[in-house]
Amino acid sequence: YKSIVLSNQTNTIAGNTATASGGGLRLDGGAATIRNSIFWSNTDSGGQDESAQIDSNVLGSPTVSTTTIQGLAAFAGAQNSGADPQLRQIAGCDFTAGTVDDDLRLTPGSPAIDAGDNTQLPFDTADADADAKTDERAPLDASGETRLVDDPAVVDTGIGPAPIVDRGAFEMDDPGLGAVAAGNVRATVGGPEDVLLINGSAGGTQRRVDIL
Image 1 (cartoon, helix red, strand yellow):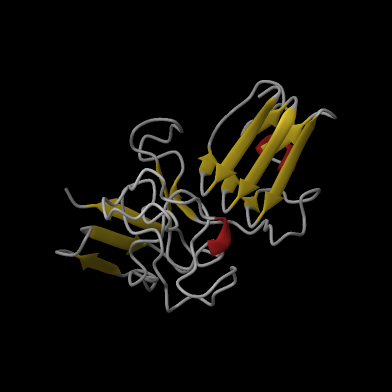
Image 2 (spheres, helix red, strand yellow; image 1 turned 180 degrees about the vertical axis):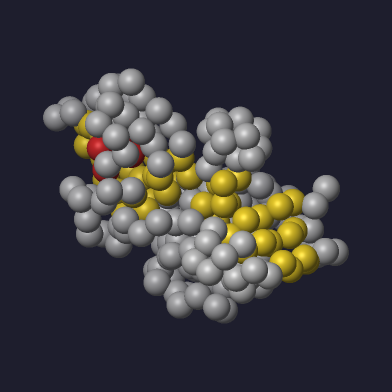
């Protein structure tokens, strides 16, 4: 972006690629205010360090807070974090980022849960939930689900009274799933989502299969 004022709040930018610099966001001028967001697994010519997530030249001036950034370095402080947000499937089942099966929601136990700043949620000027209240904070996430949901299994590390907003575009919508013991299979059917979680071995990767 050049010569603009960009407001990036409660977004997830992941799995993007740039041939030069700034795979997630490149600011060549102007200002950017970034809050409650996630920049993860973006790649540029230098790999996947911090500058591959957010990059700017001397004319750009990004202000970043309560945001998760892979390779966190220059943006350390202001409650930013470099901890893996544990997104479900950045590249989806086809292992190709940017296609329709990508799943950028948070998994249970993600350090991005209840870690945002309630005071930086945008106001609901478009009345997204049709309750005739435009002076409230944004009530819905990017998928149309409730924006503020407390996860009792996670210690609140964000700003504001509970429930505290999660970082990223999606609120954690299944806090009760939890972990699955090694070698076990558990199905949750009939809830807001039908899922099958599988762990193949101790310390192995937990897999999520949506039951259609």
